[in-house]
Image 1 (cartoon, rainbow, N blue to C red):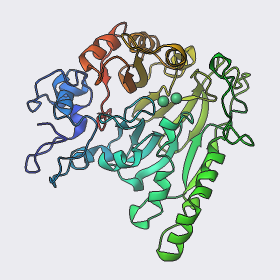
Image 2 (image 1 turned 135 degrees about the vertical axis):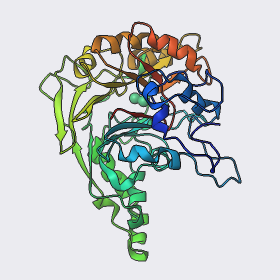
Image 3 (image 1 turned 90 degrees about the vertical axis):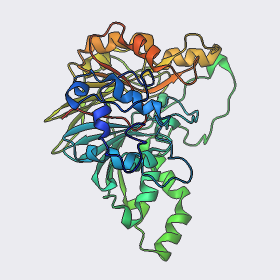
Amino acid sequence: MCELCGPADEPSIPVSLTAASNSVGSAPAGRPTVGRRAVLTGLGGLAAAGLAACGNGSGSAAPSGSARPTARRSAGPVADAKLAVALLGTQAGPLPTPDRAGIATALVVDGATYIVDCGRSAVTQFVRSGLRLGSVRAIFLTHLHADHVADFYTFFLMGSQPVIGLPGPIPVYGPGPAGGLPTAYGGAQVPTVEPQSPTPGTKEMTDRLTEAFAYSDNVFLRDTTTRDVADLSVVHEIALPAVGATYLNTAPVTSPFEVMEDDRVKVTATLVPHGPVFPAFAYRFDTAHGSVTFSGDTRETDNLITLARDTDLLIHEAVNVQGSVLQGANLEHMLASHVEVQKVGPIAQRAGAKQLVLSHIADFANDPLDPAQWQQWAKAGYDGPVTIGADLQTITLA
Ligand SMILES: [Zn+2]
Ligand SMILES: [Zn+2]
């Protein structure tokens, strides 16, 4: 029985106690006895094992007919952390799986929440994590692939209900328009969706979503005390530094550049190479309590090494294609757009990251992935602690 799924009458342990471990699924299913000190120093492998042992690493719902709360109860303390990360969803790519929700991560800084990417089920996972929608300060999108934005607008659709307490407007930081499309793989002829504006950036995407949901918004405004969805977000498309980046040269050498700063965080970004996607960002959050760097979707790049220099926590994507049947365009996409888990350790090592967490992960040869195997792969070439992320897992840094 794990912290997330323990019976309601069992004293709960904050999920943060299970954070900095790395052997999900490889240890007995008994209640972890590891203490906070051991876990926070990366020695608590048993704890996260409990996450997987209950079959609820994805944050899947409690068994039918059970009224027991799950993550909301036990993850609550993370909402007030000085510096913590909640992995809302950890799945790479758009393929729905029963084990993982789409990529989305919440960073908590002195009780305020910053969301990085909003993949499938992000809003549900946010609530299940015990975080408060009223604490959301900003949303950051690394790029506009569907697996990163599928639940983006849902924050505002649901937030229009006053009872939700979503403050507004929420600043949204994301890519501007790509400005062009690459040729199709192998010279194939493919259709162009919306040819009059085929590369909308974050602003146009948001505006179009508002238009698409106009009837719902209009009728709720006339029938309830709902707020106008259009008033709940303010989009800031991130200006690119003058490094010659275009959709044909997506990630030239780039020094980290500032995205925003408030009373809790200073956010910098860099351009990362993610196949033909442009722009694609990695983000770094510096706070009074430490720093957290998000790779976004990327293959190996010195831009990320520079951004993540000496960061306290590097959250990096990874895929495994070894032993898979991927071939042709799909295999080339993986290798041009992502980092193989066997190669992620040296990235963290070169950056001097003090801790590595893998999220946005997929194993194309093993379903579900073997966390012990992934742990072994990811630790190759890296001296620090590694966590193979699971949904609703939290990492408390301060
Ligand atoms: Zn992705
Ligand atoms: Zn992507």
